[in-house]
Length: 187
Ligand SMILES: CC(C)(COP(=O)(O)OP(=O)(O)OC[C@H]1O[C@@H](n2cnc3c(N)ncnc32)[C@H](O)[C@@H]1OP(=O)(O)O)[C@@H](O)C(=O)NCCC(=O)NCCS
View (cartoon, rainbow, N blue to C red):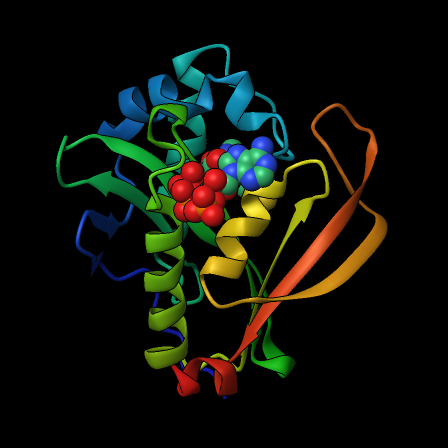
């Protein structure tokens, strides 16, 4: 059974994963929320105005009171900038299972950053919360995300056809991946 403890700070070699704060609005807006290249395969569209970012941030911050709410901002130790986010988008309580989502500022792509963040979040969710299964999926047109899942120890489980909708309202096929507690314990 899982024991929810909420979003606690996690540190890795290059990153600090912590709760979002309202002061992160500038970084979030300029580094990723306003960038169509970043949101292309997300379910939400780019923010056109920083007030949208502030509104979204306050709704996230309001939810930190719940012990089953897991949403980290990704802060670069090198630059001190907030460069992305990683969160639990769904918990399936009776299966001790959760699903992860993430996004990162384009300037930081292809440096292994999201892989580093996802491994740290998997460790936290298995070790501290006792999940049995952690899953993730991506639009089949977005293979870089699948690379992150594989490099973080997840296994490819196949394609769910037309199981998602992208931010233009079109249906899309989802490639799905997961890591089990038993896979994680082998490492
Ligand atoms: C997907 C995303 C999180 C990857 O983060 P990242 O920090 O760049 O990931 P990593 O550097 O750990 O790994 C990326 C891998 O994808 C590969 N890659 C990059 N572009 C690719 C492409 N077009 N096709 C195939 N592989 C690609 C990289 O070479 C790298 O693999 P490698 O280490 O084997 O060389 C980031 O690109 C992003 O935020 N994209 C926009 C938001 C998004 O798509 N979120 C996920 C929604 S499911």
